[in-house]
Length: 87
Image (cartoon, rainbow, N blue to C red):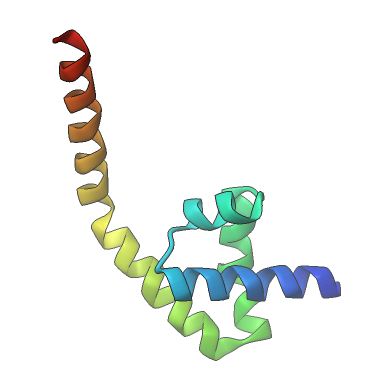
């Protein structure tokens, strides 16, 4: 694996762990696609740093279990703004 890919994988993993970030947040932060982040942390990271992979997996599992809540809050905020604009 090329050095820049390993560096990107480790930086992405550190960002996710330190910020409890989602794959989407991480992709936005580093200017790469969500698919790339997902492949980095789910396929490449276990070979580079297995212990860090465990920590990233825990954060992503937590995010996955909470995504329906974040979606509901986003919808609530969207309609709150629509209501304010009508007034």
